[in-house]
Image (cartoon, rainbow, N blue to C red; front, top):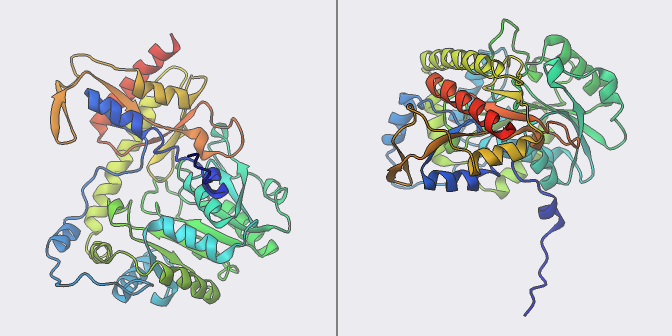
Length: 417
């Protein structure tokens, strides 16, 4: 009997993740004994703070209950103290705990936008923004930044060309994922003026604020005067404490009407993760030395990766000023095809290749090495933009970064032959 059940138009429109779509090829390669240097995803390899791990091991509860829908007040108060270090003045009630920063973005869209409303986003942009917009029925409109200009913000006129009666918000990521760009005070003031002039929401994803590598100051959307009611701040503990798996984020706004609406969605999903909140709260205070060490390590990794990439003939990446990503231009016709080929066909082996790898709980002979990257085209909505670019995450140790870029160079040589 023929099955006439239909997939939803929303499901058809939902894009695949450029970060994860090549994962099946990677699993198949590893199963055959290929060592993969994973530069495709922002999963830090650094350990979680020991203080947080100790708290996890000592959780002493007889019942793992629901937490309040807005998150534990003790965690929200700890975050108030944390933001105060960055001159962001908040009350605990202005913070809502979410299941990761992703849920914070989704709830912001669902609470502030109607189906058909438009959001202006500088591209390349974190690919899941597009997915959350599809979920909310909203439309992403992009202003393009270019690698040749270091991904700096386009002129105001480029934004205003897109603004119409359906425009309801601007979304920025600062420091930026995937480019590592850090917005200047002048650029943030331009965004503020647009938000004020057209009475828009400003969604500001600031999960990488700890990772700023220049003398330039960190300018939060919460620092911008005159648009306090327009700002919705997105945050997460995932990156700064290497706690991606506990799924704890935050939505922060001084707009009471937005908070009341967000809370309806929070109540519908019941509560944020219980254990995750306990770990997150333990991570905030008393981990300053940990944060300094992590920062210094990423600073060195950034230098290592940028230097190695820019030494490869035909490759170029600007120096990222924040986060732990960069977008690199490669001498290939189609970066997505190249990234897939690296996993399905390419193997590099020399005297430095390990004799064995561990995969799925077993040790198997290593038949070679390759590198996994995120094709940058998935971070753009403009057709053919980023076709020869990849996003690289410098989340490996420096030795592995050097080796991975060496393997990348060998892959490019073979691919272009």
